[in-house]
Image (tube, rainbow, N blue to C red):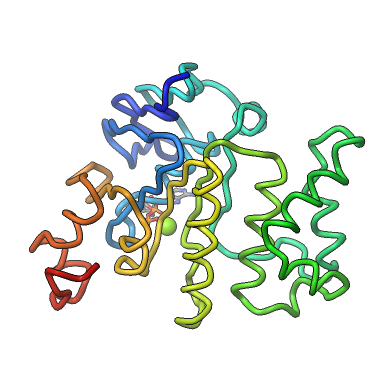
Length: 244
Ligand SMILES: Nc1ncnc2c1ncn2[C@@H]1O[C@H](COP(=O)(O)OP(=O)(O)O)[C@@H](O)[C@H]1O
Ligand SMILES: [Mg+2]
């Protein structure tokens, strides 16, 4: 099977009568991490939603493992292997971690629940240590791990993450980035929107830069990180060229 997981072909999408993302073409390959960079309101969340199918499609294609999905509902895309963790965390804060994980299995056949939970708990042992804790009482980073775990139980081959480190301390942001790396290392393709551009570029293979709904630049993360325009606009202009 080809390593090409997702191909966007001239995708235009938005809300109501307003296209927000225009003519967006790009590719994602198996096991890679791509960070999507852009200012506030550039259309990053809109692009993720268009890939998952929760907003209005106008034209172009979302080709996932060879199949055009742009006219399918989100649940159909989920079944084919696209997982989406929207911005904000912890959908069920007053439920325990164990109860949250059980909720996350709802689209799986009953006999698969135990194995699915076992698998993500093995991947993220912190969840076992918080098993009976109400999710809302965990740290922000732990809640983000839980949200990712709930989506990963469905074994997506593509994971869309919208600002997973938003509002977290630097230490917790580092934990979230390490988690994203770990997810990619098991073969999951990741597309992540991050306000911590520097941190995201460090763990990414490639980057897409969006401005006003259009792709403005793309390339290997290392190159994007050292591009003078990117340094100026998103990195405070002071990143070192030789930063690893
Ligand atoms: N649910 C919505 N309905 C209508 N317009 C929206 C909606 N969500 C976002 N927009 C508009 O789409 C544009 C891009 O927003 P968004 O994709 O959230 O940007 P970003 O994630 O890059 O900050 C903004 O002009 C915003 O007002
Ligand atoms: Mg957004």
